[in-house]
Length: 303
Ligand code: C5P
Image (tube, rainbow, N blue to C red; front, side, top):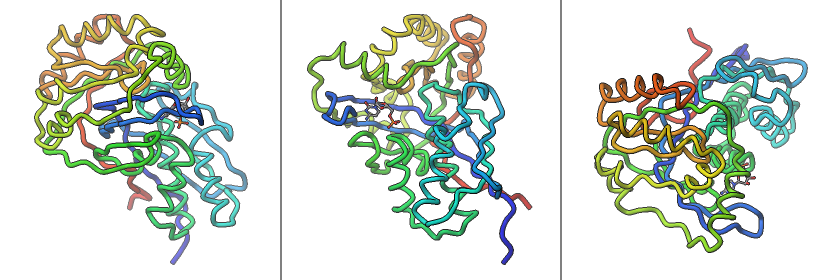
């Protein structure tokens, strides 16, 4: 067998159908009941053998992506190399399509993709459980990027239970001008919510996912970080109003924001809502995508 020259992995964005947040823990993280749904907006990470670890990035917002060792893709390559006693001599190229710093887990996605790509390139033979373990060390959302589909994340979001999904859900994502820092949003949550109750997944929401009922899912969407995101980024309220006035079933801040997510009935409605959002001037752009989507998947080298 010859060593492959490069491996490409495609990895999806996520939206949180429910993000229930508890009080801050002694380690600074928050216990969550986090219902993740992977959506069909993808980054692609290509890994090629190189003398030194190097990261490059192209695509919308690429100039905001760090290319040093703080990039989760670089950290993933280093973590896997350390575990298998080898050097992380690779060039990681990120083709970015997931909104940067938008609350859609783009950085986490790149970490999961780099891990799967390096694993395939190096032929480490790591088990799925080992890869998920490394993902959890890299960040709370990284294990879900590996798994995709739909899952309930507990603990700080890294303990996953896969969820059945009975249909396709259609979304419009309004990409904001600017980003929000996740720690800053959690800090604002702490300030606004001095006595947060223990987080619990909503039975109605899990049932709506299981049956593929978009109207029921719309009624159950919930994000405890939304008041904090709106407090730090008040104009998101205008974006939310615009999307719902244009016919979305419901609108919500995605994760820690500032991307807002609109659940719509069908692809036609998605097109109308996206157009209204683009025309409104209340966001930088709008993207249409469906869920669920598969997790990190090797797509190349292509024949
Ligand atoms: O795990 P990750 O590195 O993605 O988390 C980024 C930041 O988000 C943490 O440093 C913390 O401030 C906040 N966070 C949290 N509770 C979680 C997940 C993230 O407070 N469950």
